[in-house]
Length: 61
Image (cartoon, rainbow, N blue to C red; front, side, top):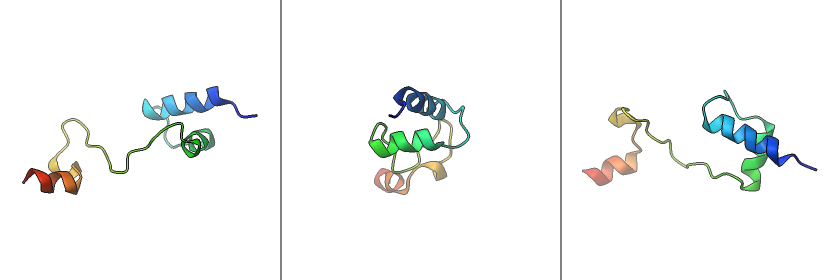
């Protein structure tokens, strides 16, 4: 039997920036479809134009 509470806690830690890298519980949760990961990197507030995905930069011009 799996412990979904520990998987959820691992995901909250990852999203909150408290985890350095995903552990097995996080990867298991992702595999089960409990969380959807972005396919492109998300720009952070105040980031320069290089952090914006290329498709967004092309559509803006």
